[in-house]
Image (cartoon, rainbow over all chains, first blue to last red):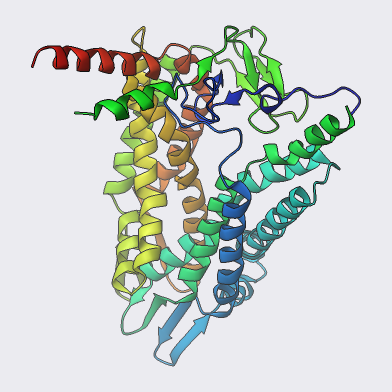
Length: 213
Length: 236
């Protein structure tokens, strides 16, 4: 970047995450409270990288049982049959049902794994002090933030399938143990996004400029 | 009552606001910049990372109030009547949103049941309730402090309110079930469909900076609390 970017932190100012007010810490204090909304202020979200890593690693661990364990168990006169998420996608695949199958494939398999990979990439690139593609990385973060909630779809599909198909003794559907891990992946990745501070992406630029100046 | 020393340290840590209120930092890249005066309906974006910093809304309070009231009515309908029913070989069954969570709870999936209940029932209720209280109180010239507390929690509640995601899930479930049984869509299903649009409109018409700009400052109320304490001490 040709023009040195002036950041709030560079000027010793803190911007409130809740109300957006810009303020200066009192003399001798490193951090304070927002005079308008009373939020505790800091230059960057506290322990952002550690918290995001913790949630992300938790999500990655839960991702395995979420895909291996069954999410639904169907009991009919012929016996019981358990389906994992992927088997659910395959079951939905039919000449008429393929668009839905694609929605579930996208929301339940592609979004969660893409989220984990994207956040992992963002964290690693920050820790390596990368100054490349800052605006694309910020955009990637916004995309992860925006799209994350949609992976909850499968939890709702299984919830209402199980609640409705209660035609004992003919046929009944019960939730399986995979559902818990899948919901955990979604919640943990959302928490990871919440604790991630996108301003860290831009901080290496500022610190490099300071060193060159 | 507060401990005296606690209260003092509490006040000392307030930051100093800047003299120039139009200076802001981008929440996504921390670039310091000046917000321009905006026409109604216009928006300002960060020059470095393109994050929308502010969009000035047309008549934000009244429009948001109308949409919030409509959303509140639809929310009550959507959660009190059946959402889906099925009929197959002489059997009939139906469920509400809460019924879905209840079934999970009864089948050993208590944590998932709580997540479903929170994201599909509780968070949307808070989202609508908070907004209603905020908009009503913001009609006053200087909105009271508790409006700030609600404003602070509103974005988080909104993140976890997933009515639109739930509806997509319900539609997928509906088509899945249609293979085995006749599906009877309930009134709640249509209410939820309309509710999604009202909630999106409610969020889009609201201007959070408009309210923050007029709110009672936390620092001022802390000063008053200290003054009150002094009076209490002076009159033993």
